[in-house]
Amino acid sequence: MPANPPSPEAGPFHLADGLPILELCRIRRYVGAVERVIRAGAHRVLQMKARSADGRGLFVWVSSAALEDDRCKRLARKIDEAYPDAELLVCFHGRFGDVHNPTGLTTDIHYSDSIWVHEE
Image 1 (cartoon, rainbow, N blue to C red):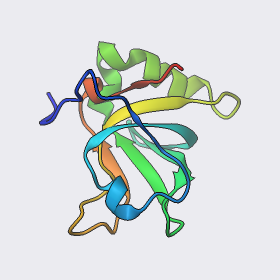
Image 2: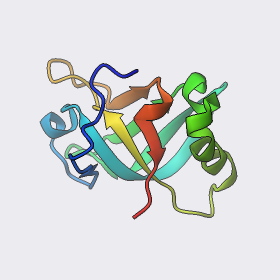
Image 3: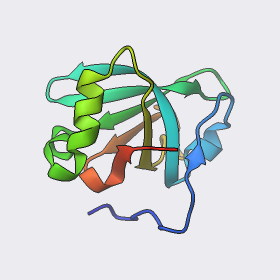
C-alpha cells in the first residue's frame, strides 16, 4: 500500500510542458499522455509527452510487481499492445524527484493501486 494514497476527492494534476521543477516534486495524483514505453526487463518505463520548464523529460518507472497484479492488468495490456498507434493516458500517484535533490525527474511506481489507465 502506498505511504500516501491519493485522496478520492482530489482531482489529478495534468502534466503539461513547462511545469516548474518544484511543482513536479510535489506528491499528488498526476495525469498525462505517454510518449514512449521503454522495456526494462520485466519493468516498464513510461516517458511522458510533457517536459519540465528546463526541457527535461518526465519518466514513470513501473515495477513488474505492479504490472503483474490483477488490478493493473488493463494497464499492462495497454502498455504492451497499444504502442505506437494509440494514445495512452495514465493517472498515477507520486512525484518527480525530491525538492532537495530534483536531478532525476522520475517517479517510481511499486504498487498496482498507484497507477491506472485514465479515461476522460
